[in-house]
Image (cartoon, rainbow, N blue to C red):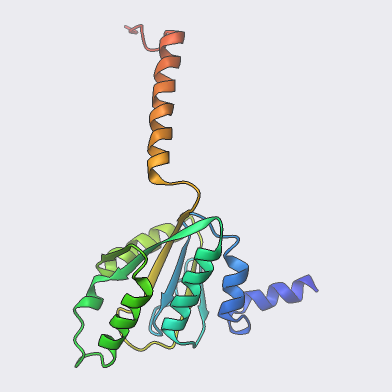
Length: 187
């Protein structure tokens, strides 16, 4: 029975994107990524990057992925979108203006980092070397519409991490003073 379930999960065609999101989200943590991608987004060859074809409406998938991440207690999204999205002309990509408005409405309550596409892809590739990435491809046929969510810890923040690192530094200095480490020159 377990091997049949493993085979089902290994075959992206048999797993719905909603099911995959529901099953993978508890496993994902800070430094993992979820990407809601347009239909031409390439399949990655790296083992840690899983691609699922949803054939669902792009905006609906973005909305549901965001809702799932927000409902989780352990992670929060750091959202990236392509800088190119702001500059693509309607005559070159019919429907892009309406999409930009829809996406703006969806992301209005979130800080969004806009970067050149290649910069986001490089960060994603680098993360995929060590951490898992879930890509959900939609039926979107407009370029530069992918939404990238880098997951971060929801119960710890950068300020707390800085305070912790400073305390660790002070602690190491005190330890060095108490043991006399570093007080003699070898020569």
